[in-house]
Amino acid sequence: MLTPADAALAARDPELSALTLLLDPAALAAWLTQRSGLVGTVHAAYARYKPGTSCVLGFELVTPHGVEQCVARAYTAESAPKLHKAVRGAPAGSLIADDVDHRLLVSTALADRHLPGIAVMADPSRRARFLSRASSDPDPALRTLRYNPERRWVAVARPATGPSVVVRAVRRSQVGLVADHYRTLQRVRTRTPRLLAAAPRRGLVAVEWVDGSTVDDHDGFHRMGTALARLHADTAPRLHLGTRHDHGVAVRAAGRQLAYLLPDLDAEVMRFADLLSERMTRLAPVLCPAHGDFSADQVVVDRAGEVVLIDLDSARLADPAADLASATAAVVQSGVAAGDDLVAALYDGYADAGRLPSRERLAVYGAAHLMRRAGEGFRRRRPDWEEQARRMFDRAEGTLAAARHGGVLR
Image (cartoon, rainbow, N blue to C red):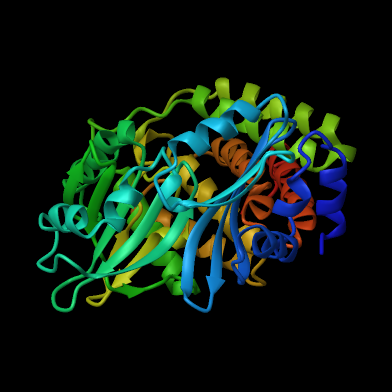
């Protein structure tokens, strides 16, 4: 059953007639049974929605035979040629069901033409050839960790003996850049996973799996902040350059998405996005090696107690305030009760090993990352996405206002 927020969203976009199915896991499962005979449960994991154009949903289909990574694509009449192209280009056996009248197509992840590495890893001989460069086991057990359709697929390969390997399927054009991130950050003092193999034609990258524990308490956040400060103090000139303009573009894009999700705040959201983008351009450039998508989810404490920064796809030369802001926004998004204390521990740990960015930089980037994460609840299909989006936007406005009045930012 649709939540009130999802029902209201679908009602605002009648041209995307299949949107109600994609936003309702039970309804989508029933439709799949009717169309294909498959009986299972839909667990929605990731949605990318372009109002008036399309919606792509990544989900797990759990059946008595196992779990299948799937993609549902819905289009408007104007965008229908994309559906026909997807059907024509789908590998044999990857299509599950379609509805031409409502412009809806469901397939397995093998039909994701943007991520050819998924098909490589599904083929035993091709998988073995790639993994021979990273693992002693040509046929390890594979478990999907994350799948964002048309963006990236991440899995862990666990051999019968020997260390595990993280396999990342990305767009072919991104393989060289991602591999360079891992190579470059091997030279910094802060530990990062080793690059094991890269195959641009296959769209695959393999890196070291780090055994350890996650960061979720005061001490962990303090150590995480110290590790981040050491990364920022290092040099890595070969990293991609991330600019204030890039952040401004991302903030405006997030503002447009949030304005559509919260139509009663659309004018206020867009004014604020424009203000943030303008404030960003006024900051003097400061560049250092940056993680690019920093949060507690991207940190592992290994068995020796060393902090390791993982998931380096977005690494770049950027403003140090952006990483701190990203981690802070992730804590706010989580809604954890001790969130402010964890953020304070992060900042204290950073200050122990480096100099904190200025109040203005922390405020501008802090508000920007809160805006950029405000729609994450919808993308991850949280039932309370509307409430979370409003809370994140309120916090973004408050962060910038606190800086103007000399208040506390963390």
